[in-house]
Length: 267
Image (cartoon, rainbow, N blue to C red; front, side, top):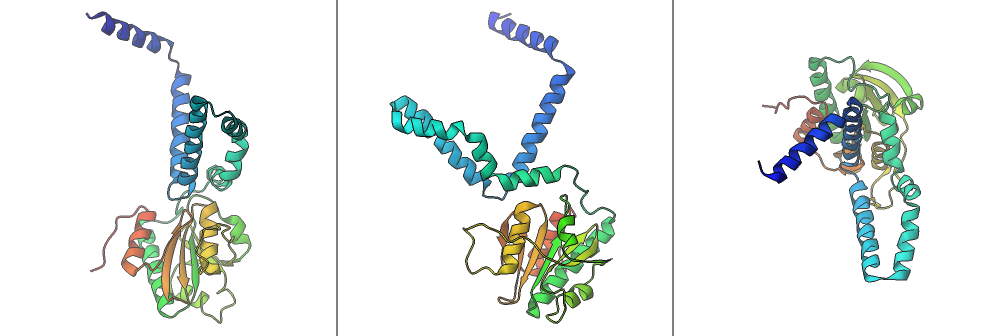
């Protein structure tokens, strides 16, 4: 056998003999943490911030190689406080990650048939409200518990239906200015107030409803459907990202995918 191959086999045997069950657990935990971090930064501006930090790291190495002492000193001071900077930059993502701990199962208590019915009722309601030029905010709770926002509204705890959603968002309804929260397959609360997004890069033409929808999804994993009474359109917000002018078919597809249901196009 070739000496190099023998050396590799001996090293593998040595690693195997020194591997403990705790090492498997350690690797599994690291994999879970990395996976959850990748899920959280998906569809957010976090990727751009990480790219910026990567560019600064490359610049730091370049300043060492080129002996740019002043520039290197500035970057060295920056990276010496990296932990604090990361906490400040990614405070929203950190809050979201901590909120996942002890989170509730998605759509608890609803069967497959009920979930399909709820999806159809939400989609029909949003389109009907847009056609009538009635503004609306429909929040679907997922893994992160929204109890804090539920407490700010009025408890309803009713089945989800087009009729109920239409009546809540009538301009004469006392609850039409707030959001409805759908939890566990039921319309759990109405008249709930959501946090406004503080993102300075948002379009200045966006109204309060859109900013509230974006603000909630920046802090939680909720899916929010926002109906604009000004533009007579439906938008979907997820992970802080707004998709505007969504038609009925696209809205149904997004809801089916969000609930992990098989999409069924309407005939």
